[in-house]
Image (cartoon, rainbow over all chains, first blue to last red; front, side, top):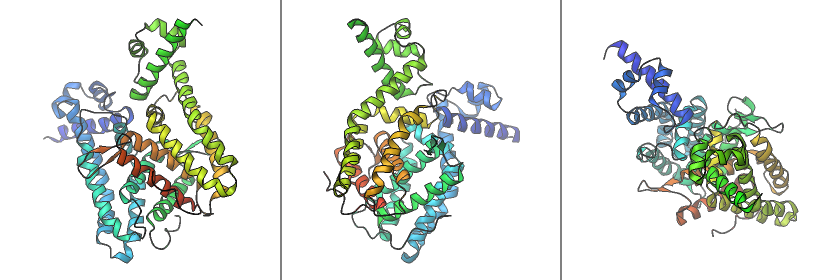
Length: 211
Length: 211
């Protein structure tokens, strides 16, 4: 691939990433992606094939971005001696919140799928979501002191909440929507997530102090 | 309004309710709603005016459906003597889960808004969401025994989780998506929500036994 072709490919991928996140797969047309990338539809299809293939490339990029930030924290939880597992779990929570707030397109891409977007591409959750959930269950259970806590559903809770907060925010007393761009809302959300997961799982000690 | 006109109006409203929930406001055209209702686009606009007006009628219906089920449980929390407030809070959680599972179009309509659907209709959260959150904060705080719990963010957590579970479900070990239609997943989700909120808010006693 020449460097010009590589640059075209990257522009298409970035435009598709933004548009699929904003509008969903079903509502996005190749012509819109081509326009946003400043290229012809022919250039888009010669680089990526059909819309479905471009979507798969976008979801792969979302996964790579996510892994680059979260994977190191996941390894920490795996390898931490039992006395440090709780700290490692809280660092993983922070990394996941930070990643999602910094890359709101990623929760948006997945949330479109919750709303039945791209139903014809059906294997993505099994490929990307399930392995992470399985890892987390195995590695978090040894740290809990509440044998009746549902670790699997607690992990889903973190995902639902982070997606919800990043995309919907919360309403303050004046009726204004406050999301991750608001430092006070972000601090409250973060402290609440740590406290909620700590208490629900019955982790020993206290959650980390608010940062 | 004649009975035939009333019947037409109801058919349009039902079709719009389903289509806005499935596709979102921005991606739904009046012609699709007319087709789904078996009527002309002219009949739709003579009954409801512009698409925006029909959307407002759909969101009003979503609110009425929600209130009919949830409002009585909300009153119970308000009026319960302190010793019974915890039971009333758990009944409210159940009512909200049941309502959302029985009417998945309602969480879908709101989740589309999280994804910036219908941005030109901007006052709905302030009108419908904030009063309920304010009520809940005022009435739940007296029952908590964890002064550092964030009641406002805990209520948002319940909403994010119920919307997430109803629309996305969770993955079982075989990689299958399990949502409210799966009795075992529904039981686990319900038990987890009760436990999580009970522990996060530091409510006295135990959460209710799984049903």
